[in-house]
Length: 79
Ligand SMILES: [Zn+2]
Image (cartoon, rainbow, N blue to C red; front, side, top):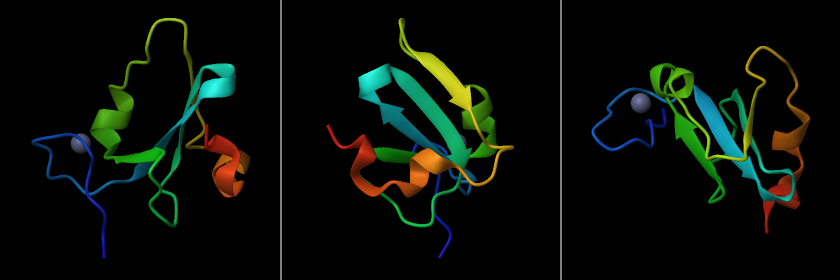
C-alpha cells in the first residue's frame, strides 16, 4: 500500500523519506524507506524539494545516491 506524504493537507503519495540525525544536526532526504519508522517522515517529491531545515542544521539530499547507508542502519537514528 502506498504511503502518503506526512504534511497536513497533502494527499500526494510519498516518494522520499526524511530522517533527523540529532548527533550531527543533519537532516537526510533519501529514497522512500521500505518500512515506516517513528523517527522518519515520508514526504512527497514537492514537499521534499521545498524542505527547509532548522537553523544550525544541514540538509543532505541523498535521493540520487543508492544505497542510502543511514536508512539501513536500524536504530542509528534513535536518540
Ligand atoms: Zn506533500
